[in-house]
Length: 262
Image (cartoon, rainbow, N blue to C red; front, side, top):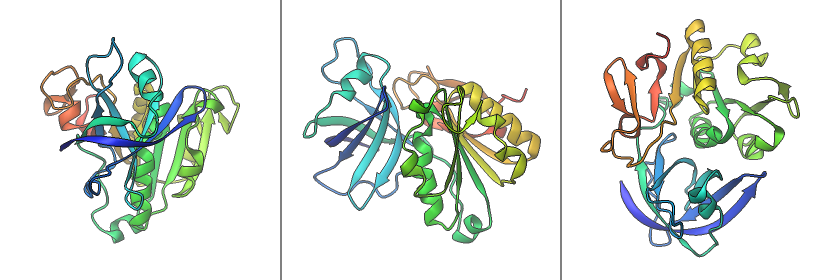
């Protein structure tokens, strides 16, 4: 874990209420051990109403360009300030935090397994980096991405670099109409592993499907997090091991650890 003043390389507006921040460390190479599913706590400067750091999933790490990507949904004063950063400014970040998705142990493990990565809204963010790592290990992941409208489907061209992409929208404006769990893909194809991140009702529905089919399932929780270190206890989740802090013990859990199915 490090505290770094990362340099803002670019701020790209995506749709009507999202931005993609590309950050770099202009002093040294980024940590080579950042895991898909980990997150950063960013300090928001210039906002009189934002006192705590904001947890943001690591969307992608481009080691060739020495870039860290953060996908931000603009929903309040803090994220609005982040969306107005300019190239050349600095963003103070604590990273990497939490535990990420479990990667295959070897290339042979990945090669023989089928992975389905299911995301909703801005929850698709950590799945991009995870998909890239699966591709490196020889797997060809399938992405199932959902949103309310086509405007909320994010970074589709980036996802297509690492695997097949299927989409759903609740209003039918792009892809299949309905929720991700209604997609025909789930009835027509077999998967060995499902990884998901997004709104809790969506993840619970995906988890029910996975458990019903006997499929290994990892979920990345989005509980309210303040400190990111397990000190403030505001992100506690009930599990088979007792109450755990999502920021420190997660945010990624195997669904068998959670009490969702009870």
